[in-house]
Image (cartoon, rainbow, N blue to C red; front, side, top):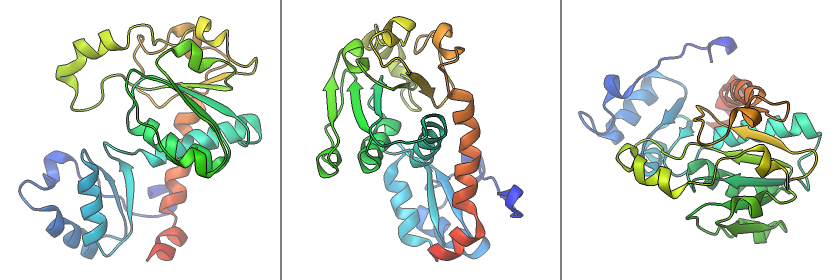
Length: 238
């Protein structure tokens, strides 16, 4: 935002205590009078919905427990740059059925991208059938990777799940992405991870290989956020 000439104000949970010392409704109205844009990273998606309802300025979902749309925009920008086109690509998600996966499920089909999912638990999304792409669900990582152009994973232990770590590591045993996983994928397969990465999620041979797009992916978060925060975007949303 500063690179665009704006004046960012970073409010951590310790600064603002959203919904604790002051209810979300009041906070949304105060920020509407002090700023031109809210980019909110929250735990509960319902908090984001209340911010949108009560604020008189644009609100961007920086992250919630249900969706992570800005990350998905960076991911698809990265794939567009690498492959030249998104239409017809197959992406395999191997890991937790979390907010990043939810955003993949609601976005991939609209871009003509096929999605294959391997997770111990996941929910079917109807968007794939509306846009003529395929959505394949399995609990077998190798089966999900078969023929895929892109292998993707994320943390197995999200914020608020720290007490479940031991059980979750057990549940996801065998889900680590390795060169063996990629051996059944398309010859041009690549790898994405939104970071930070843990070794149990993907090994070094994949993470630091020429197939890994994680660092261009990380850089592209800057450009996609800047696109959202451009003055023309803000004014157009008002």
